[in-house]
Image 1 (cartoon, rainbow, N blue to C red):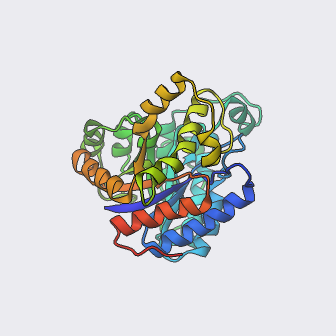
Image 2: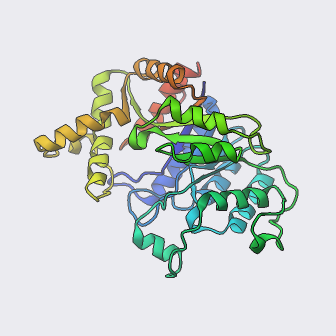
Image 3: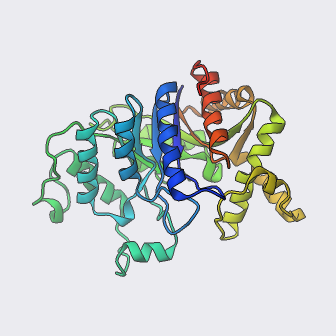
Length: 336
């Protein structure tokens, strides 16, 4: 099973945006050394909790810092961008780092209505069919005529370069059929709502049509994961992440608390019930316990790859999650 990284460049309390992006460089280097297959950067707007607002810029820098790991976006929020611009950006990236770039896109806004309005420069949002937008972008990337006359008089430069892998993100199954029909990979965000099912993945495979971007169907699943040498330590490190989800459900997105502050955070009985319910969205335990669960779910649901999202308060704790999981699933010794 391939193991990969989904990074949001989180900014814990007491850290800065610059700290978060500098840490992303360390994470990419470690992932490269340990044999992680790919690292994707998310796209988030109008907040102080994440530094990853321009993932295509970050992966360009990371490509120069690494040797083998694939780098991509998980994902570009395509509602904000022109197909021509997306095609040109990812063809440029692919020319600079051949056979190492992933073009991953999602239909969500990656922010609130204020950021949607600002990214549209104050203009009314045009609810384009985003699946059509993806199809047009893929055609431009592949130097093909599009089905949209607006783009048939333009060439997405650079021309005739090695193309990126292409992926469509999803969290509810709605995109599975379209990912298959457009011949791209399907990346399912299990950490988002926990609604993974074999039926969703079977739908994707049933409708899959081979393309330049993906000759056969590939499914990755993103999990929120916290592991440590003991279960108690893992639970201690996991609570700030669980609280962050609780705050998000209430319309707040503060910076991640320290584990100590999280332990002292006043919780109501309703808070505790919500935390218990949400625990299925966050895999917590020893590396062996979590790895065994991943392998069971891979067998049950039939996916190909796991992407780990790990947003611990401490940068060192985050690195250690990726070290421990690589040691368990990739047979790679932990490194400093």
